[in-house]
Length: 327
Image (tube, rainbow, N blue to C red; front, side, top):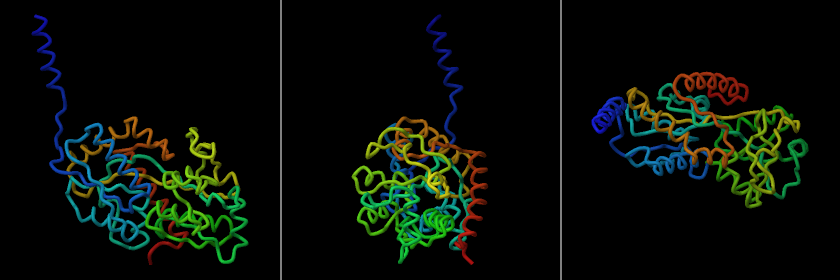
């Protein structure tokens, strides 16, 4: 009797198990619209490792870097891959900014939103040997500099460039913005003293901070970062003051999200929402958030779409104020 009861329960349980309506039948490609080494690339490869370690899909995951034209190459590739459920793109606020700056016929609503994985902060970095001790020192030096101090970042008319424009406006100064293909390249240029500062994300400069080549002055956020484990120089991310607290009233954060091409099916979209939700719940992902000082902020479904609509409106105003909108 007991055996029959157990068997019946097993059948009942099996009957209530939801079957996957769709699964990938070949390798999954994650397009990174930047060069290797930047924060977007690091995130994609972290997710790739987590998916493979935990066997979250039966197919291999391949990361492909397409950095040309400030990320437009990767975005156009996904736009042209209409209906292809084996391609994704990891992107940031550039999903709004690139079309605004170039007039390329691109819009995030041409894609299929999957999930926002986190938000990312920006930090004002300087060479470790630079004399500046805080943002105030740096801005004072900028006012007296001739020629202007050189500030590096990823691409022109993108997030880093927008922050530098905001710094100019807030401090009544002028900088020479030097665009690079990735945050990794920007960090290399700063560590070699070829530029005076950068606005890299935490993950893009942490290696050189640990190596004693660069150091952070302040974070462009409303609040300090929360991670208190020491990183370098006996300091943690939480020890970095906000730029506003040092007299530089500039704040900015960007999304880090996953999208598919347009016109995929609801079942295909649901497969990847489920996949990246699982990724976000792993201890490895939480460790990555801490290492990279990312703001935990997972969203999917309508919550993600509403965030995208509000963020697009915000960036349209910021880009217009900076004169970055294509005419």
